[in-house]
Image 1: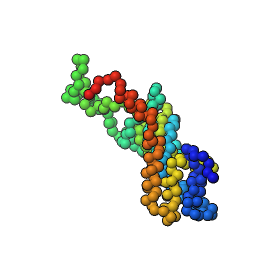
Image 2: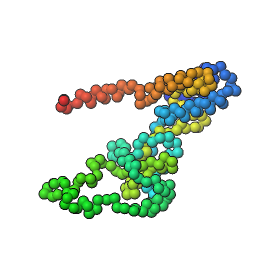
Image 3: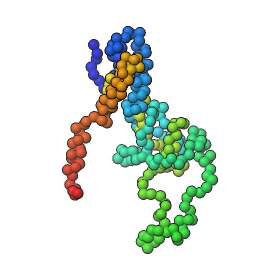
Image 4: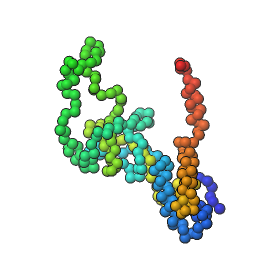
Length: 245
């Protein structure tokens, strides 16, 4: 007899279901668990990783280490006064040179000056007139408000920040790997996909069955579920006091 349905199910329990479905003996349970772990790994990378948000202090060399359980990151930014993450600008031009070394900043000696400098003062480049003054705006950055630049070094697993980054910590939202206590606690909507994966690897089921069950599981994730509150919010916002087009 199985226990009540909950949001999470131990991986060993799911493997026991696969054991029962395939008619295998308890001697095969270890093999089932290893295959179940492989299935959970693939599903986590594809779509089923659980989202976490953490605040991490910035190291003295203007880098931040990614959490050990981070599979892939989704947001890097600063927390604003509304409890929202204001994302940093992703700057692929930032160098990964010595980004895992404490003396990174002292090693970043520039060879050229990339600023506009005195060029912006030349009359030929003055292209903006305001309040009786003439200014140069062409080529002096865009209008995007940002609180810093970042780049992720996936090999060394660090977030690189611009050298004049002003804040002492950053918020990182990421997909985390499943946590192992006595066993992996697996979202129950992945149960049939894991069983299909195990059967496919044991040549007791079609490989396509796993993909069918994975698609079905993805439709059951929290972000894909139909939530009445979301629909009512959309209806309230569309009926606001505003001009119609």
